[in-house]
Amino acid sequence: METIHSIYPGELRTQATHVLSGIQVITDVPKDRGGKGESFSPTDLFCTSLVSSMLSGMGGVAKSPAFGNSIDGTKVRTTKIMIDTPHMVTEVIIEFDMPKNNFTDEQKKKLEAAAFNSQVGRSVHPGLKQTVTFSY
Image (cartoon, rainbow, N blue to C red; front, side):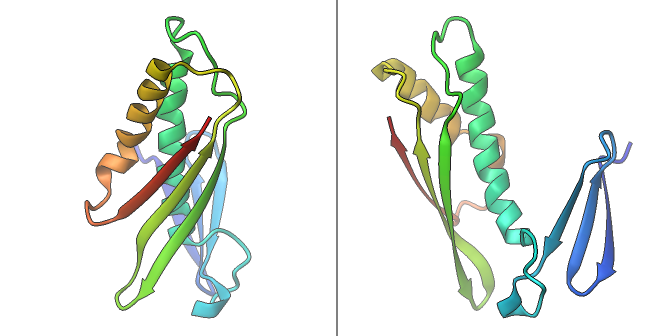
């Protein structure tokens, strides 16, 4: 069964629908590249997918009763670095602001391992530079 249904309505915009839920995502090419810039660009979503995968993995670790702490309220700042030739993302800077929950060194190690071993992170080209910091 199809997971995502996408259409191209024109003007460098796409519309993707998650088939199971019906939730839609619209992408726009940035204005400096000839698009409308009214929504996430495809490369913005790429970076968002990486961060979301990291957070999901960390959340899975924290959800375990044995972990004994929560990452609820974690905030992340993401910066996308692009080059023009070829036009591509070369670096993603990811800054995690963790809640002040007195994480132990062991908990920090488990959370960071989950982030660095996320499904999306393992799927991207090894040449993508991922600069990741954690503030506890």
